[in-house]
Length: 496
Image 1: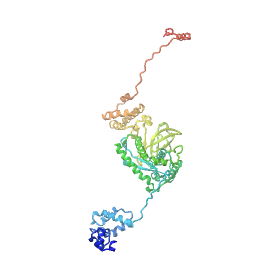
Image 2 (image 1 turned 90 degrees about the vertical axis):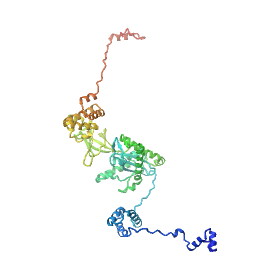
Image 3 (image 1 turned 60 degrees about the vertical axis):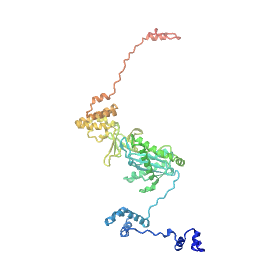
Image 4 (image 1 turned 180 degrees about the vertical axis):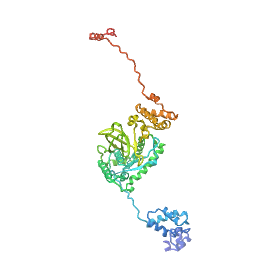
């Protein structure tokens, strides 16, 4: 076009190295090819032309949260002649309309995390991993602690629900494993712990949480209820941690663990493997953390209980048995997520596994048959209607044998034999061996013979050797006294 100012079309085309025909075409229309493109029109009639502005838009204005699939179902109900294939078209049209005319949406503001400033705690349900312990499905949660700057993570298996006890134990384990504490600790308001609590109990739980944070020099904070994105630095980490665990379970080959201790070790190993990848950043953040106090704060929740004439006490709708000599005493029970420490004064008596209620209207039971077997021996018929009878049996073989005896004998006789078996297991410390013998009897449908079992498991009397002691005459000792100091009396002189 610059050459065209001075030369003819043919000369300008030659200088630009294009054909004369192209030069005439550009002379007539100097627009670029992209500017000449004509927008493609519809190739078929718009099925939403008559209903979108008149019916769909009013619905969207009246109910901004209405899902497109609900609008589609409503339009199909109003207009049965609409084709089924308009769903995607309707969804795209609604999305475009909301982009132009819809309400303002919430904005997530990305935060810059400083080292040592904040630590986050949250709980997540782990049932979707289908983990089993000794063949039984393990319904559990995971307490998850994370430092957003370095990515440090700590996880602790929680057998119960979200509670202050679980939070205190898990958080302190994380801090002591890390070697320091951040200046601020944030949770999700402990929604499960606060639910269904009256105002005084909520205030007490708040004071305990604040005291726990103050013990480590941390400032407690909570995100607003229902606003999970405010805790997003750990909410998103839940999914990543679960995915790593799922991969580790697949590589392991099975999802069953012998004991809960083995499963907890598996969780700790995976968390440690993740932290190893962030070791440099964790070291940087560890240098900015608050120094830990001289000792941990109390993890448990203390309760004062009274042992009743039933041989136990009830705590949080669970009945626990203790030795009958404690009947009438007031004990202090320190409640943890998975256990109870029982104190008489300042003396630790025992540790019991923590139980859970069966349902909202049924109590749970944690029973050790050794605590009540001496009393049940005097009243064996009480076994038939005992409230915690199924929990009394230490192994499945004993329960199955009781049912077999009830089917074969009178109820009173079945109770008497079952109690005698429990007494034998307790007194001779043969619980596992006796259970195996009972399994053999059940396979052959044979009643147990108590005399044979007692003879089999009773301790054998030790055979004592016959010891003959020959006394030595006193005169022989006189010979030793009279012997010269330079030598000893010979054996012949002493009568040996």
